[in-house]
Length: 266
Length: 331
Image: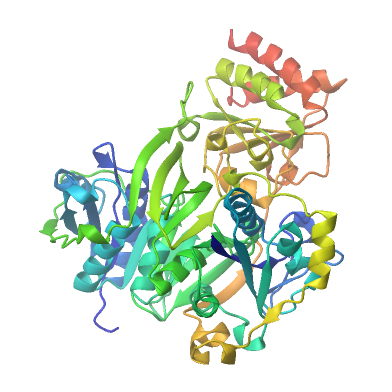
C-alpha cells in the first residue's frame, strides 16, 4: 500500500489565546514568542490513519509539506512516528497561496511521486480553517474523495471509511486510488519513538522547487490565489463577567443557582 | 463574468422539509440579492423534492431550480458535484452559497474547484460591498482567534455559511415565485462511492442543537463518571449535555456531543461551561449562546471573558450544591 500524506506546519493552535497577535499593517499573524510551530493536529491524525494501515498491511508512507521556514524538528515528526519519506515544497514561489494554489502545487507534487493508492489530508488546517485543499487535490487529480474520516480500513482494491455525520457516521466504500480527509474522531495520534526520532534525524528531506514539478508558476503561491484577503482582525470581546461568590465553593454554587433563577435563566 | 447575475443558494431538505440551514441561507441570500437588485434562486436537489419548492419561495426565493433523480436521494460527492456544476453553468449566478455542514463541507470545495472558482468556507457574515458590488466574506480563522474578510474576482463567488449565523425570514405563503425544472443528466456509473450503512448515535432526551439549556464539560471533568453528574443535572433542568473536544477525543463521551469548530454549533438561552478553559475553537461552537456561565478553577481561564456569570472553583464542589439549590427553586 503506497500512501501519501499532506501535512502543514502551523502556529500551535493550543497556544494560549492571549498570546495571539495580529500585525494589522500586513494582515498577518505574529507567531507567539517561545511557542514553536507544530504539524496541524488534523494532519497528524492523517499520519496516524496511514500508520494504522501500514501496521496492518505494510506499505510506504510519503509525507509532503508545503511552506516556508519549515523547522526540521517539526516537519520531521511524521518520520519519527513511522513515515518513510519526506518531501518539502519549500520555495518562496509556493508561499502566500490560498486553497486553490496550494492544492495545485500539492497535486503536481503527488503526480511526480507517481505511484500511490491513498492520499490522506487533515480535514482542515488549524490556521485558516478552510478545509478544501484535500477535495481540491482530488478534483485536480480526478480521484474519488471521502471527507471527514474517523476510521479507514483497507480491503482488496478498495477502502472502507467511516465518515463523520452530525449524529453518527456513514460507512462509505471507495475504490483505489482515492483521497481521504481525516477528522479528529479518528483518535489520538501515536507518540514518536526514540528509535523513530533517531532514524528521522538521519533522514534528509527531499526538496522540490516549482521547476521540479510540471506546473506553471502563475498557478502557485501568491500568484495563483483566487481569493484576496481584505482584512484580518481580532473580534472584540465584550467580557463583563459577574463572578458569583460564596462562603466556600459549594455556597458559591448555590448562589449561582439563585442568581440564574433571579434572572429567569432557570 | 459580466453575464453572471443573481444569488443562488443550495436548499437542503431534511425529513421532507427545508433544512434550518436552507431557511438561514434564504434569509441571508435575500438581503444580498436585494442589495444587488437581482434575483434570489434556490437549488433543490433530491429524489422527491419538487413539493418543497413553494416552501423555498415562502422563505424568500424568487426562483426555485428543481433537480430530481432517484440517485440524488442521499448526498454523494460524485452525484451532487456534477449537478451543482450543471446548474451553475446554466443559471450563471454571481453568488453561490451553501451551508457549512456535512454536505457543504464536502460539496462546496469540490464544486468550486470543478467550476474553476474559489470558495470561502464557514462564513459568519456575508455582505455586498457598496462600491465594488463584490461579496465580502467574513470567516473566523485560527480556530476563532481572528476573522478574515475575503473577496474574489472569480465567478461565481462561492461561500459556505456557518450554521445559525444567518437569520431566516418570516415564512410568507403569499409570496410568489417561479419553479424551473432542470434535468439532472446524471451518469450513475461515475459515482465512485457506495454508502454501505449509516450508523446513528442514539439520542437520550433532548437533542443538543434544540436544547434551551446546555451543560458542557471539558478536560477538567476528568472522566466519564463526571459526565454522568452533568447528565443528571441536565435531566433535571430539561437540558442537554455537550462537551469540548478533549473529553470526546479521550473517549469519555461520544464524539457526537462535541461542541465547537469541528463539532456542533449550539445557541441555547443558557450554556453552562464546566471545567472548560474556553479555547477559541470551542467558543466557535457555543459563542452564539444567549448567556454563558463559566465554572472553572482557573480565574484566568479564557471562558470567563465570554461568560455573563462565573464561579471560580472546583466543579466537584460547585455542581452538587448548584443542583441541590436549583432543585429546591424548581420544585
